[in-house]
Length: 196
Image (tube, rainbow, N blue to C red):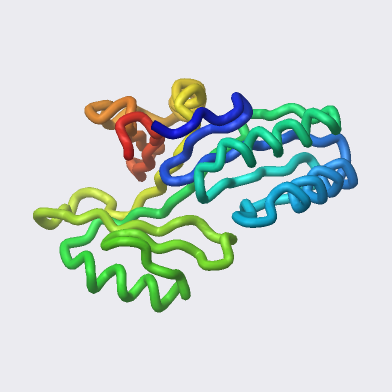
């Protein structure tokens, strides 16, 4: 069993992340400098913006997570779990290897496993291919997967429904829910529940 992370951190698919709100860009830079001193072996992905810093740990490192949270607290920063998410584009395909090879070449991404591509520079969304057993001509085959912390899923679903969406399926909930926009384009809200 993995050592628990600090309360600031949330699991999203294969990573853990935290977002710390800042009052200025300089405050964010100060946090990033402290993270740089803490993370000498397995540096995290850090996204610095004027209103906050998002930190993503590719390897689950409870000690580093606690250190980053302490550094943020030392600067008077608090975590905002509602600002943490991971976005993937997913294509349903009959010929998964061929479709994956095309998108890998087109995007310049690296392949992970049999069905997933990731941006080697950490800038773009993940890209997955989901195998189909038979053609689906009456349904879209490209959709967005949005991984959110488990404690944020219901609020995100409620917001999408209030914005005119509809629930297509909750058969796999709380692992994921399928929603659709007013024209039927699908997206999934996913949580870490039931995943490795």
